[in-house]
Image 1: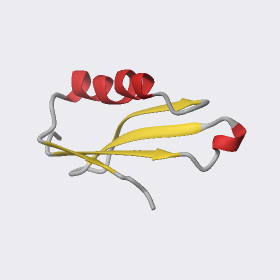
Image 2 (image 1 turned 30 degrees about the horizontal axis):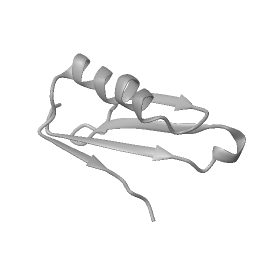
Image 3 (image 1 turned 45 degrees about the vertical axis):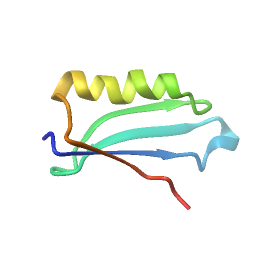
Length: 69
């Protein structure tokens, strides 16, 4: 734990009111935190995904975010 944190979001179901955001540890491929919300909300992503992962597992060396196509 603690080397790379991958944050990914899935907005394919946004027309149905669902956006998924999750954080995955790059070394072990474990999902360390996740959140589902009706529309993308950066404050919710910070509080429920990033902040909860850092408080539980500590600070990561790198953060990678998938920008999609």
